Length: 463
Image (cartoon, rainbow, N blue to C red; front, side):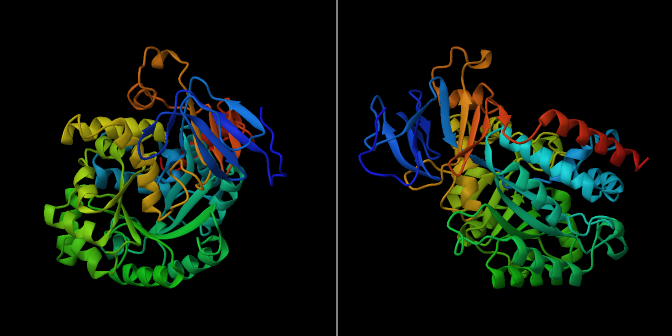
């Protein structure tokens, strides 16, 4: 071990990994990296020791170090309604229609537990930044974002919470029941409140831990006026915009019937076609629309498992990237994915996208890149999603000493194709939050017992 002749601000740790490091852009043969405070200060060359002094070594032999993944689309509350019999084997609209009858009974205790459980699932699968889109506000759940903020504080991770909304209920021709929507004045007022209370901008915080975005649920659950007002509010507060778009052909038909326009045309009419916006799914675009999206630098959250389970289609990720779009990865809600595992989502993306584009263009590095640098780009974050000097030390460490990896020649490809699903260690802002596959502060067994009890209560309330 080396020691510095000068006094340092904080201990420096060498994460030593002869297997190399996946930086987020490409596999890099190396011998690990140095971390000081919350930042990466050196990438160590293959077969060499650091050039900078260090205080301790974390032996990562037999393990792969990669950037912490960033989930860009989820609905945490849906972990309470996985594999509900009445929702199985249905496409999107009938699936939603059934589950709204269950979700209308959601309360704060349920959301708190669901947020902790979904967040922990994501972290255990290699996520250092978790994103959620909460848009149902039944009578007993007026302050959903506040509840989620409390739960995330216990997880000690980065998060982007999108203040979702629905104002167009069935009585006005929308899809959701009136029992889970809010008035537009209430939505806009609470959106401003949660931004003021919780949003950490990149201007006032060097490396934000919690950010707020605004997220009307979809074109078939809010009015055009709310879309317009939300875009203005986001611009005023310099926060991002998020919504579902072009997920199914049913959605295209709905928009044309109600608004006389395809979803993307409608989005442009509402002032959303810009680099402040990222969209969930983005499956059913024409080539001309893909070009417009790219020119506007709109982001797309690719959600392969949900899209396959609901038989919605395949996102044209490579076409979108080549057009100039920012493309990242999301697990989507656990009632349509039934899993919050980001590592598994990477594998699903690799396999699904190869069906569309072939084996040579869709590599393990491409799929992992969607979950790291790609997802960071959706959030307009330049400090995370990549292993490089001066970037945040948000790191996922996967152990390859398991039966599923035995015989693998390429460690990075093995993570994806052999099916990595649980991290050995997870570091956020230079601090270990998971070691030996255990969160330092969360009892996962106790959490699962509590969550299961609340899930049964919620599901039985709809019978």
